[in-house]
Image (cartoon, rainbow, N blue to C red; front, side):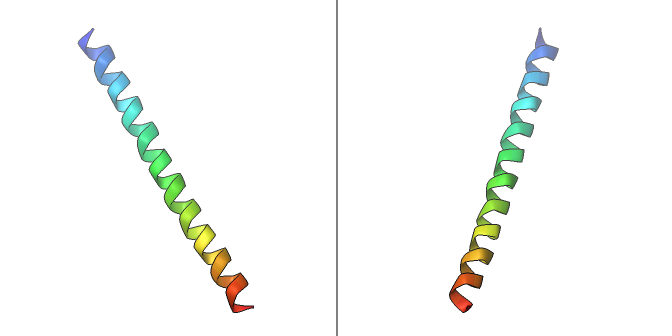
Length: 40
């Protein structure tokens, strides 16, 4: 049982980490696009 909980915890951490990265990249992309449209 303990092993299953650890695996589940790792999966959750990985999913959270991926979400954080995705949001971070989205913010960067958004800022770059906004910067470009402002400079045009």
